[in-house]
Length: 168
Image (cartoon, rainbow, N blue to C red; front, side):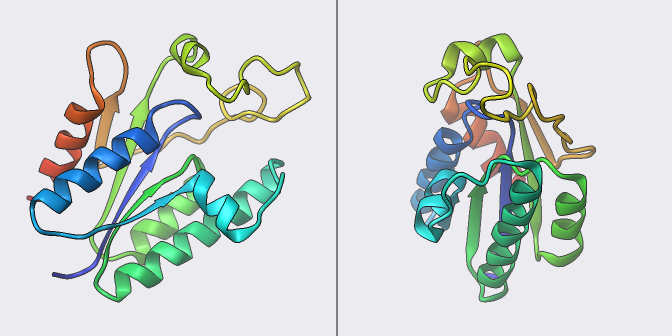
């Protein structure tokens, strides 16, 4: 099987990690062992403390992109769940990654605030730069898969929609 990258993006609390884990389960059931790269976990593994300013986030997004590229070039199916809402990163991914599938999980701000397990949407203004609140997000312009990940949409249904697109 040739390598591929499934780049799952959206704001914090949009369900990226949950959907990505479900997607891993679907690939495993189909006999494929994907590599899951989760943005929060990668920060911990790489020892990236803080670094939430826009320049650091941009640099980190490219680190994730290059890592995905290297793994896919070795034939792996890579699922990357990360905010990384930069148009230039998305463009780089499309130009450089084999079998790249961009997924955008859209969730309204009121729902993100309700789900907010990290408390980032409740932080006082200026205390923590948050995508979609203090930082203007560059949402994907033409994602391969767009999912309204709220209301009656489950993580399982979202993962199935992504899996179906990747299996085409």
